Amino acid sequence: MAAVAIGLICVEGRLPAQTEKFTISLAPRPGQTVHYVAVQDITMEIVPDVPAGQSSLIPTMKMVGKTTLAFTERTGSPDPQGRVTALLTYEQADGEMSINGVTMAAGGSLADFVGKTLILVFAADGKLADVTAPPEMAAALGPAREFILNLFKLMPAAALAIGETTTTPFSIPLPIPVPGGAPIALEGHAKTTLVSVDADGDDRIAKCDQAFDAAMGPQAPSDPAPGTMRPSMDMKMQGSGKLQFNVDRGLTKSNESETTVDGVLSFGGSGTSALPSAKIRGTIKVALTGTY
Image 1 (cartoon, rainbow, N blue to C red):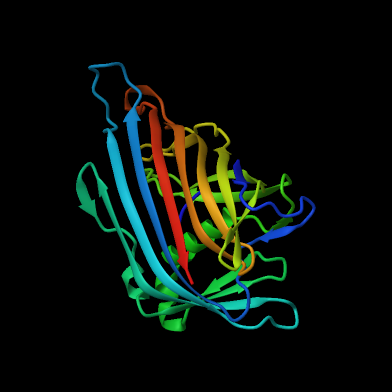
Image 2: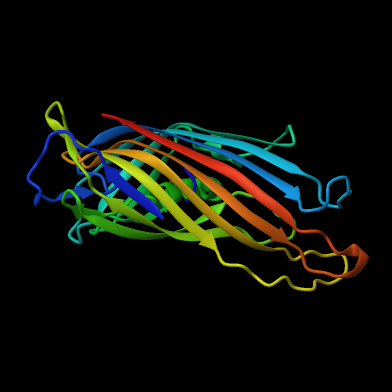
């Protein structure tokens, strides 16, 4: 759950009045129980930018990773400030990763979350305000918390009529291992256009297409001290996806996205010890499915 312009466009079915507003938000309605499965697949390749046949101090590196979360979300009643608390209990939480075919530890202590409950607090505006864990899970909270927060960043909180558009800014980290580098974060926005709403039994489903656009501004390479590296990056991300949102229950039925990441990794330094730049390209796929 990852990272990640985002345009959500819903497909027409049953035609409601064009002026009717439909709320799209991940903030759950009170008194509901929903079972979710979230899967994130990442493929990244770092290739040194050197002439063909020339050796490089930077090896070609291909990273493949997958994170799977299955959990049940139960919501209570809003407090006087309009905040809604949801209890999120894990049935599955695991991750796997390999670099150049060699399996590596991934997901940290994700497996420790199985059977445990996180507490999600939604503000009155429908946005996720906080994620906390039981005291004994505080040390392991990081990976799961970031995955959940990143999933929620890619959803708008808006009331839209068919044909209307809203823009949601976001900042999302990318799990790319960079020697000596700070975590990579891309900033972009989500454009959401509601196109139509279909009937699904007694409920109505907003069916949506997504488009993503984000970038990391270029940084000037520094001249590091001997034996150290201070890489800088210029990264961009674009993608598309599908969303189905139950507007009567106020929950996501499904959400799938695929984004492409392109960038250049540069290193400071000069002389014979200087490292070449490297090209980065990869894909991130995220799928969230809810049953109720």
